[in-house]
Amino acid sequence: MDQKTEPQLTQLAELMQTECSNMLRYACCRLGDREEARDALQDVYLSVHSQICGDHGIRILDLKSYFFRTLANHCIDRLQSRAKTTLISLDDVSDVADMPNEYTEKDYARVTMVLATLPDEQAEVIRLRIYAEKSFVEIAAILALPLSTVKSRFIYGLKKMRMKIDRNEFLPI
Amino acid sequence: MTCKEFNDRLADLFDKEVKPQAREEMEQHMSRCPECRTAYEELRTAYDMLQLSEDSQREIDEVSALIPSVVPSAKKKNKLWWAVAASVIFLLGVFVGMSNLFTASATAAPQSPVILFEKAISYVQQVGSFQMEVYARTRPQENFYALYPNEDFVKANLQLIREGNSVFYRVERAGERGRILMCNGSEQYMWIDTDTPVKAPLDYNLLGIYANILYPDRLLQRQKSAIEMNKVEAVSRSETDSTVLITVDGTEWDQNIQQLYETGNKGRHKVTIENEFSKNDGLLRSVKYWAYIDGKKILALYTGPIQYNTMLSKQAITAMPTMKKDKIKDINEAPEVKPNRLQQLQDETSEDAAKRIMAALSSGKTGNITEAFSGTEEYLPDYVKMFRGCKFSGFTKRTSEDYAGEYVYFHVQYPDGEKKLSHISLRNDNEQHIWVFDGGL
Image (cartoon, rainbow over all chains, first blue to last red; front, side, top):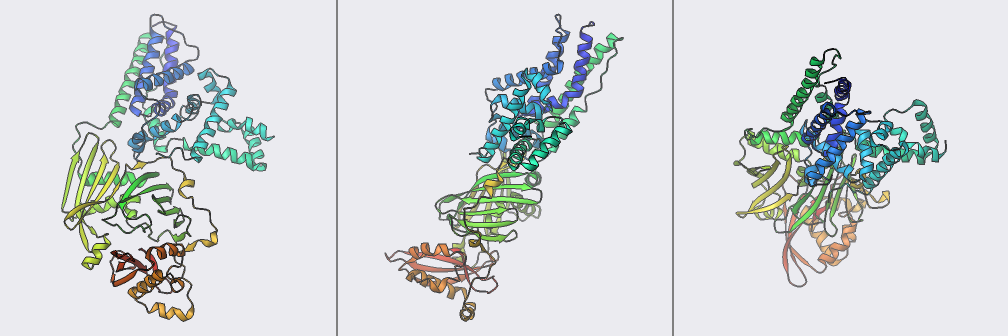
C-alpha cells in the first residue's frame, strides 16, 4: 500500500458508505433480481478495489462516475450472459406480492420490465435519475454526455412510457 | 416564459434538486397554460409509476445502513489496510446476510395448508392490482351468478386496481355480446355491447360467483376457516419444483340451477377446489373449481395464471361505451307502471309473471311486459326472435338461499318440434314489488 492508493481506497470506502443504497437500488432495477444485484455490486467493488491496489494501480479521477459506469457495464454483461435481454418473463413479473422482501424483489422486476420497453439510452438516464438518485449533471458525467442530451433522453423516455400506458401496452397479452 | 421555453426546461422539474426560482417560474407558466400543465402532469404520472414502493426503499436503506463507517488514518498504514480489508469482509458479510434474508432455506419444512392460506390471504389483500382470465361453464350473456355444467367454457377477463380505500375492477366476458361489469370506485355498471348499462351501488352484489375470484382472499379465507373447523372432507398437498397444490374437498351451495329444478332445492353439493401456490413467494397462482354432478366430477370454473401488481390502466378498466348519461338505468329504480296495472302485477306469482312474459315473447307482442324488462328493453328483440312461435308448459318455481329472486323453469317446444328445459330468473325486491327480468332464457 503506498501513498497513491491510500487516498483512492479511502475515497472508495467513503463512496460505498454514501452511495451503497443508490448503487444497490440501481443494480436491483437494472437486473430485476436482488440477489444478482448484490452479487454485481460486490463484484464491481472488489474489481475496482483490486484495480486500485494492483501492481499497476490505476488512478481514477472521478471515482463515483467510474464506479457507476463499471457497475452499469457489469450489469449489461450479466444480462447478456444470462442469454436474456432486459425483458423479464411475464410469469416472473406476475409473481408480485405485497409482502416484505418477496414484494420488493418483484418491485424491481416490475420496473425492470417497464424500462426494458424503452430504448436503452433513455432507460439508462431514467435509472440513474430515479434509482441511483443522480442529478442530471452527475448523469452527464457518468455517461460522458452533454447535459442537454441527458435531459432530452430523460424526457423522451418518460413520454414514450406515457404513450405506452395510454395504449395499454403494459397489459400482459 | 413561452411554451417553448417551458418545454425546453421541463426536465428541470424532475432533477434531483430544483432551484426554487426555476420551479416558481415553471409553476407560474403552468397556471396560465393548461396544455403545458397537462404535459407536465402526464410525465409526472409516468415518473411516479417508476418509483419503487416504500418497502423497497426502506429495505435498501436498512441494508445499506449496516455498512460500517470506515475512516482510515493516513498515519497508520497497517490499520488502514486491515480497515479496508475489514470493510471488504464486512461487505461480503452484509451480502451474505442479504442472501439469507432473501433466499428461502432449501431445507425448510413444508408449510401446512392453513399457513399457506394465511400467507396467500395476506399477500392478496395488500396487492395494488391483479388480473387473470377466468373460464366458467356459462353463457356469455348470462349474469354472473349461474353456472351451466353442460355449457362450454366462456372466458372472462378480470382486472382489479386498489387505490387507498377505492377499488376499480372490470369483469369482461369474451364472445358475442359478452356481459361486462365495471366498478369505477364509487358505482358499478353492467351492460352487454352498447345496450343500456345498469348502474348499481357498490354494495349491490352483481359479481355473483365471480366475487370469490375477484377477491381471492375470500375464497382462501373460506377454505382456511373450513379446514380449521374440520368442515372439509379432505385436504391434500402435492408439489412440483416451483408450486404447491392444496386441494380441498368440501361442500358448497349448488350453483347448478338445473339441479335446483330437478331436486327442488340447491342445497349443498360436493366440490373440490384446487389452489396452486408459487413456492417461491407463496402467492396464489391459479384456482380450479370442480363440482360433482350425478356422480361425475366436472370442472366448472378455472383461472389462468393470476398476475399481481401488473401495470393496469384505470382508464381502460373503467371505459364504457359512448352513450347518453340519461340512458343509464339505476338498478334500484322502480319500473314505470301504470297505476291501474300495479295491483295486478303485484298480485302475480313469479310463475304467473313468467307465463305472461313467455307468451308475449312467443307472440311478439311485448307491450304488456315492458315493466318486467325495465332497464333491459334492448334484450327484447333478441328474446322475441329466440322464442317466436314457441309453446311453453310446466312452469315451476324454485328458490335458493343465495339468490334474492326466484327461478321459474319451463319446458319449451320450438316450432321445429325440438323440446328443451329453460328457465327465467325474476326478482321483485324493487320498490313496487313487481317481477322483473334478471337473467336466464
